[in-house]
Length: 145
Length: 385
Image 1 (spheres, chains in turn purple, brown):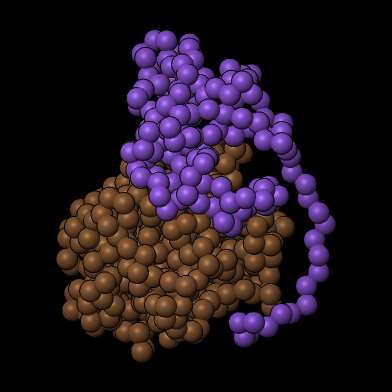
Image 2: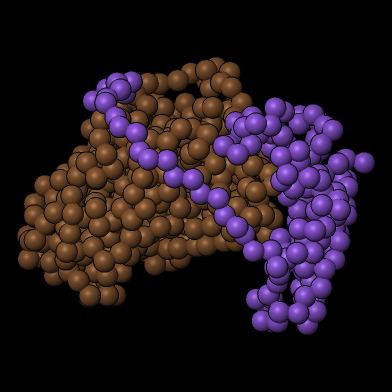
């Protein structure tokens, strides 16, 4: 067998997988994104903050949560994605994925806008918002002040 | 816990294998392992198939693999731990033998990745955490490791040349390993000039999408005596670690915490220190991962991984030769096969069978470090002859 050689193959039948994902317990989060806001969950019993949000607290096993808004933070790390995976390859521009730490102690992943990747400094202050993309999917926007 | 030895290893050719199905590739590895052990399928009590399998047309590959290789009645499970699946298979087989449940077991790691296109494979891989990451941001494994690379470079001053030097080393050894995906050396300039995949990672910082299989046959000490196996390679320790699925719940992006945990368990079990390791297989799915592995395993101080490769300390002749088979980076990374393939290489090294890639040994201690995703799983295995 040589590395470049191609051998005869047959095509498989196509399988399409699309999921209906329940959001009943995290509806505030998904509705918030449509309104430009990003929410974390906070356990009413022990005060633990969860981001990404979750409806159940593994720390005290309570399922009573309240929602808090995350609106700002500091950049911790980032990358600019040139090889876009299936599902994102219709986006023309490369996007910057960053993780920011908020004063509440949560970390938020989002797309960093309005910046050149080489000039980003860890620790830079950012505002956290959300928006709906033209294809109907939500995303979170991190913007340097 | 009983002592467990590796009595047979096999490894298929890694690469873009359009000439064979995943079962046919698994056969290559199992046949070599059986011949190496000098036994047939009747000598195997338990078969553990490790396959991530999410790029396959078959959703339940283990029974088909076992049937194809003549072990249909021996395989009651399939294991999965993302990119550490092969080690999870070895871990499962090891525990079955060590506990006394069986006297022999085979771990078969197999993966066929190249039958789907690159963007599909990138999306399948990136769905390590779909709902909170991929759904909104289009994450991929290159992007995840790029987040670690950026953090490491910003905190410790690690440079892109140092990342590229990992690729140069691993291509150098792959070019001397007939089973490796890539069969040619690369220059530092080539690596640095390659196109950006996920900044700061370039094409040559990334492992290829590979097909392949590897198999490891384990036996109890009693069975080793029955079979008259002389001077086998012993499994001294297997340590494990794990971490959060969501990256936003990680403390830090400059280290793989589960690798530190797994190595501490393994060093303690084997009663050795990092300085005793003479040859290591580490999880270099991206060049930054090899640099973090040096640090997490204690081969150098935190933040000095870049300096270690810069000084060529991980080449043969250096302080600790790493990935002398080409690593995931250049030998290839068929997910389920990788952990078993690491054991294959270490066993060949510890038996002095590695030919022109043989590491000079005194203590005959080797270490395999196999990370699943970005440390959601990790296994560190220590072998000794």
